Length: 237
Image (cartoon, rainbow, N blue to C red; front, side, top):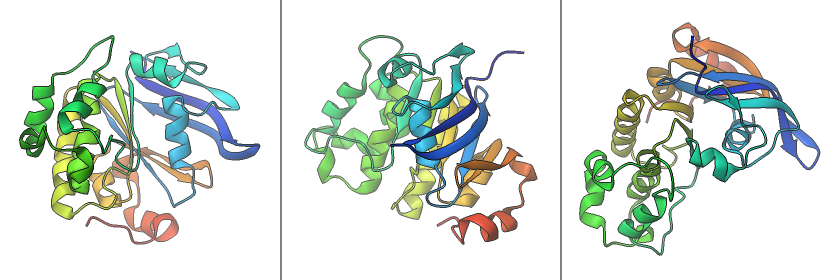
């Protein structure tokens, strides 16, 4: 059996001596979606930062396609197929859409085609000369997601990509993510809308106070219990 695309094994991590993550184990097989759910402050963004190489764990091991990458920098992981789409859009507001897309293209390694992105997000095609900061939040999020097509990733780490977006835009974003998954790319998804995440995910991990409280197939999770115990009433917009 081939190795999962991303393996997180026994990871502990935190900031300035304050531990946030405790003994985290997660496997993200190729071409699957793993949803990472939990209340605010549970450590979800911290875990994505560890996976991306922006935060070094105090203990534990990370592997990409079986190779240990624990001490690799974020840039080296990116060159080998790890793509982080952070919360808060992550585009250069003063640059045009075309300039943003050019900056996303990797200097080395596999890359996608800009036309492929414009086919997925056709609203961007007529805005190539527009500054990114003058677009709507949804359009900026589409531009941010373009990185997942242009860098030729193996695994994409997504932090609250639906945050603050209108329901119709959220629909479009999730259709695009499903299309990305169908190409064989793995997704590790932090998402505020539980119904969206459960509908898309193959596997769910519930993070509570920095520990995995549940990990297993999405079909086995008790949605109502999940909402009541951990997540309040955040449902599909």
